[in-house]
Every structure is written in C-alpha cells, then in structure tokens.
View (cartoon, helix red, strand yellow):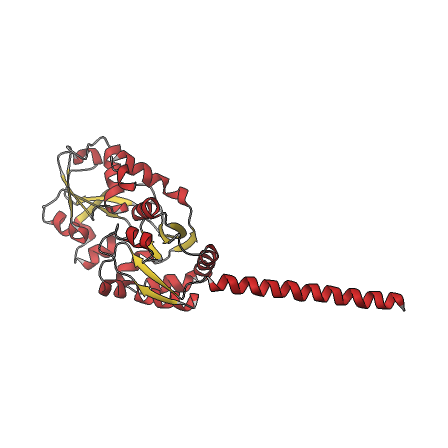
Length: 298
C-alpha cells in the first residue's frame, strides 16, 4: 500500500514539475514574441525611389511578409550609403546590400549580417570590341574604361583592384567613366576602349540594350566575388534576429523565386542562401585599402 502511494505521489510530483516547466516555457516564449516587431522597414541599397523598389522587390516583400507573419514596409533610399544613417536612427530594420555596401553598413551602423545570397557566376569581367587589339589589362594604360557606378562591387571596386594588380595606377594610367548599363553602347560606338561589369549580368544587359555578344570579347575574368547580403539593425531583439534568419533560410526557394520575377533581379536565378559570415567580406576590405579608400569604411 505504502509502495503504491509512493509511486502515485511521485507521478503527481513529476507531472507537477512538467506542468511548471511547460508554463515557464510558455511564459518565456510569450516574452520573446512580445519583443518581435509588428512590421519591418526594408530597403535595397542599389534601388532608389519607391516605384523602382516596388517594381523590383514588391513581390519579394509580399512573400517575406507571409513567411514572417508580419508587415513589410518598403523604404526607398537615395543612394547606397543612405541606409546607414537610417539604420542608426532606428528608421530602417532590414537591408539587402551588395558586398561593398555591406561593409559601409557594418562599419558605420554596426549592421548585423544574417543571410548571404550567393549568385552563380559572379565575377568582374573586362570587355573590349571584337576587333580590338587589346588582349590584357596592362594594355588598358592610357585608355578610357566604362564601369557601372561608384561603389559597385563588381562594376567599380573589384575592377579597379584588378587594374592595380595589372600594374596600372587608377589616378594616372586610365580614365574611368560611370555609365551604368550604357557601357556596352559606349564601347560599341568607340566612346570608350573597354567596359567592366559583372559576369552574371553581362548577357542580360546586352539583351536589354539591343547589343550582340558578337560585337565584343571578354579579355579578363576576376575571381569569384562575395555574396550579396541581408543585414538587420542591431537595435532588433536577438531572439527576433534568430527567427528572421531561420525563417528566411527555411523558405529560401519561394523567396528567391519571388525575387527573380523582376527583370532587374534575373541575376539571382539559381542563387542559394546561406548564413552570412562577416569574414567572407575581408577581401573587399582589402580592395578598399588597395585603392586608398579604406577611410570610406570608417
């Protein structure tokens, strides 16, 4: 009898402890979720203006809102560096940035990298006209080179570094003009001698500008570049950041699919998402030092 009662009371004690633990867990979960924001303000560093942001990332923001169960508010920025003060002031929560822009957000706003988006065939390339005698980067001394825009990882920072590696001084040995997607046309008409851009956008730019690859030849391809990256404000709760990170990874297929519905994002076709690692961007930090622009990251 005593043995039976002892077992009975032991079971009741264990059940009570379990109920208490479950209760504590529920309380902890409620406290964690109470710190989650009701909405997120989302920006993309190289997309300016609300209309372009809606066009290029409207579908993505809709799917992200469904995945997270919270509202996503598009937040246009005036230029690639404008996201930094917005993060610092608490007016911006989530940013999608290129490698170069990430370093600025990390150094100036202590933005936290969460997810990297690895693009297929992401390199800087140099293109010349098909009938050009230029075969090496060293032969671009004294020439005019079309690049994308100031601060672009694949269309300015990395190409400049490659030219330095080839023995050229960017201050005296060549002229750079920033033409965005118009570099191909300028090269074809002879306004410039060479054109540098990212390998994964090359064909799509030719198509959009009505150009043929028969008119050009690639003379150099650099090493693979670091991934684009999602960063968050360091003012967000760490528990929410972990949830955000895991949910994006878990739903990456549908998120990438929503992203590439926009023509501007076709470069992300076949991309994969990974946990972001700050050390992966050290090579770009070194490039900034090499071109004498490391103070830009402070």
